[in-house]
Length: 181
Image 1 (cartoon, rainbow, N blue to C red):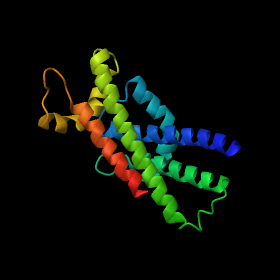
Image 2: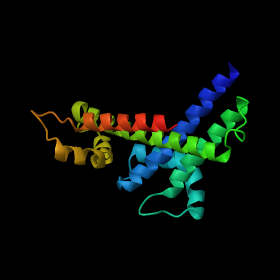
Image 3: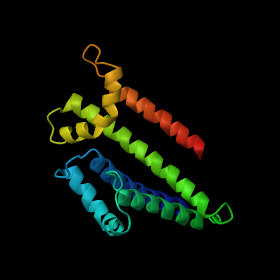
């Protein structure tokens, strides 16, 4: 029971921090402004880990590799701690490469969930509160995902099916990632 509680708490903390690092990466990639409550929260949550890593890991093609590394290391530490707590000898199961593979797949799944959340929030804001202060941010974050689909599937009768199609495609990616495990 104690292991389950610890797994829940550590898993939640590791996932939230990794999501914040991945959100930082996505916001920088789409050049979203950080002068909003969401951007400020992401910066505050991740600066302590990302800024020192930037001294070691440079960016690449506009991608903040330090954010990716911070999220990935968090997942590695989480899976190592959980394997140690449950008595699984991680070294006997392929060791380092197993840990790297599981952490990488977990990070990719978190990134897909982040993208799904962005698309869903952008769609909900466009229906419920199109003039909300956060609406332009989420529309800007979702635009790189929605624009290619909108070119193929136009708005039909005033309904935009692009968010639904993007979420379905991201679900397919999740299925593929789950089967890679």
